[in-house]
Structures are given as C-alpha cells and as structure tokens.
Length: 138
Image 1: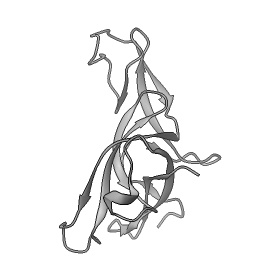
Image 2: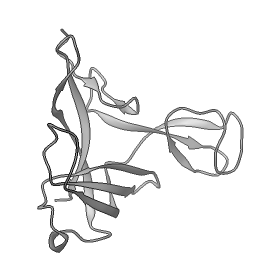
Image 3: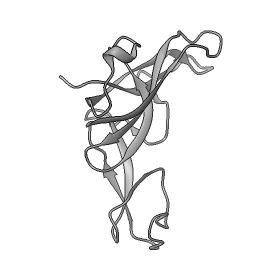
C-alpha cells in the first residue's frame, strides 16, 4: 500500500515535490486545449503540434445539473458541472461547498479547482484515490 494517493483520472497529475494539477494538451497551431494525450488536433487537424500544459485552477461555471438519483453508495443530491477554465479548457466535475439548490448557483460564477480524497474510494490493494472538484472561488 502506497502513501501517495492514485489519480482518479489520467489527466490529474500528482508530482512528488509539488501540488497536484490537471494536465491538458494544447495545439501549437490553433491553441485549442484537450484532455488526454493526442498527436492530432481535433479542432484544426494539425499533426504533432500538441504540447502538455498545466491547466488553470480557476474558471467559470458554464452549465450544471443537480443529480438526485445515482448509484448505491453515492450521496445525493450533488451538482455535476461543466466548467470553462480561464485558459480555455473545458471540463466536467462536481461542484462542492455550495448547497445543491438553483437559488445558490449562478451561471458564469467564478470557481476554483480543489483536490481531495475521491469520496473514500480505494483500489483492491487499499490505495486511496485523489480527485478534483470545483468550488465557488474565494
């Protein structure tokens, strides 16, 4: 069993000597940013122009859904959100530290990325997972 948690997705990087971060791949030709490694840009078709980049930890709420029914063991309600990061990347995740009520949630509200335990999940060897979440920006 390792002390370091495992990333819940492959684009969440956990360096030994620095804070966790989300990694995207940016096209050198058109500037589009994607999650996951690729050699061809899905936007402009450029080949071998993709560079790994550290994604912004701040963004704005683009869209959300309040989930009231989920798999057994998943606490509901929770807020599933799509966030436009300040650097142009778009990503989905859970919005936390805000009451799951539309009265408390505004489109374009500033949010920040936070890293925390992945809801107590563990692999078969007992290793914990680290996940990313969004919360209203301070």
